[in-house]
Image 1: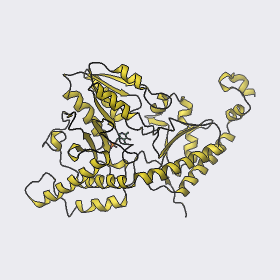
Image 2 (image 1 turned 90 degrees about the vertical axis):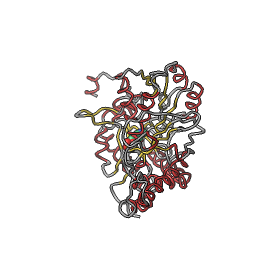
Image 3 (image 1 turned 180 degrees about the vertical axis):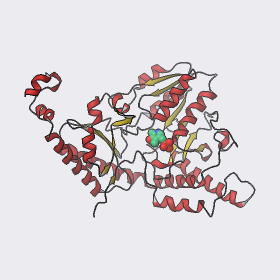
Image 4 (image 1 turned 30 degrees about the vertical axis):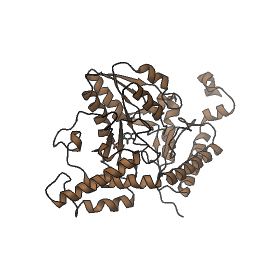
Length: 409
Ligand SMILES: *Cc1c(COP(=O)(O)O)cnc(C)c1O
């Protein structure tokens, strides 16, 4: 089979909408266009029925009840609603929130804003494996702690946090537990009962659904979580999130969730096989390559690798027919190393040479083999031009190097 370029291997950033999802959505743009809040006619009822069906499909994927699903515009909004909504609602009880340093910006920046309003936030560190230490969590809890927000799985390194253990600790202390579960949803099983999750943020476009459509799971029993609405209006979504529902988007989200529930086991097995094939090919041919984050507690479709002794930008240029993300973030004019890799203790140089490979539903074995051979070829070529790599191979300890003699070497 001929390979079509460029190859998309950045499924943590977004996913294409599955054709089956597109087809399910289409009638809701024109023929069944009703407002789900219109109670007086069949156009409204049809839309409402479709929304309720989607709610059930999403709830089923996480073992929740449909009433516990609140639709939003995406996970950024869901994270804002969960954290700000709980902070406002439980202000009398306390003003302390616990999160961790490698959260998505939608959580970190929300917490930073709350700090401006007098809340105190503890940002737990992570180990080299990318996971928090449960003892750190226990020690951070005070009698003012109202919320723990720890992501299910990280979007850069794919590392899965000890969610069930965190849920247990939160419950023991009567503290609400919110998790940004965007990257885990539809990829690995999520069970809000088993994990004692009180709120989880979800979004459709990371699981083959449309962009701009998300949800927040909000527990209704044991405990009943209450949130202050952050968007006021007509009192939609049990008063927690006003605004006319994005019916086609929601229908697509529901269908995408249903497909993941049906196909997750086989799809994840296939993708972890492809991911391991990619990793084994790279590690079989190249030395001085490093995996970032735990390999055991990791999403099946993720690998994040640093390639020492190459220049990050040259590497990306060399493989520009492959869509991947790098360990550099362009903030204004400067190239900043990823804060996630930094938190893991990855040095700045190495962070700039890191690549996140995010595999997904439409990647083929041929594509994976193409990607590994391109990456190997480009890294080998760049290293041939690298005097540092040569010196390292000759056994010279670069950290002890006197740069004057190095130049003469
Ligand atoms: C993509 C992503 C988000 C943001 O979701 P949107 O629906 O795009 O707002 C939040 N958290 C994580 C972990 C993500 O990967």
